[in-house]
Length: 161
Image (cartoon, helix red, strand yellow):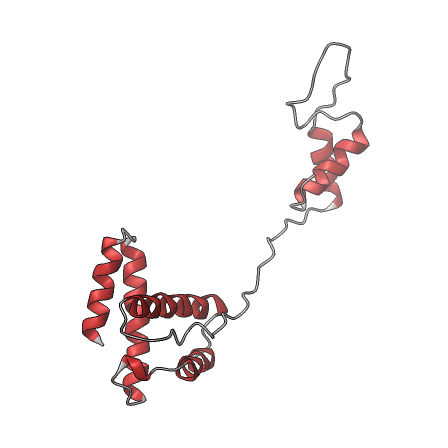
């Protein structure tokens, strides 16, 4: 299996993959091969989707994040695709394995008190529109103070208008 890994890494270099990608694939695959050696699997052809699933369960027990597990699955899938392409395997055992859902983090918002919001609203400039003048490019110029205050509050919360 080490020879196949070396061939795969050379293939990735020929595909102009970044050095970090190659290193992370190598690290992920070596961890998987250690898992296979613990299970007494020495031939890559004996790996089934149940073997990959048991590996994922072990990763989950080790408290790996879902994004890390997804990366492991991608590394394995690409490696087995390469093995399938070179006719070492007849089917990809990772093909039936789904990646776990990743949790999307909400952006943090900055809370400002009433006095700070009034102070921020008073610092905005208010200009009357006159005929012939355009304030389209000025994000701080609004039609009235209420609109100014609302938009400032929305932007402070991270909302888009």
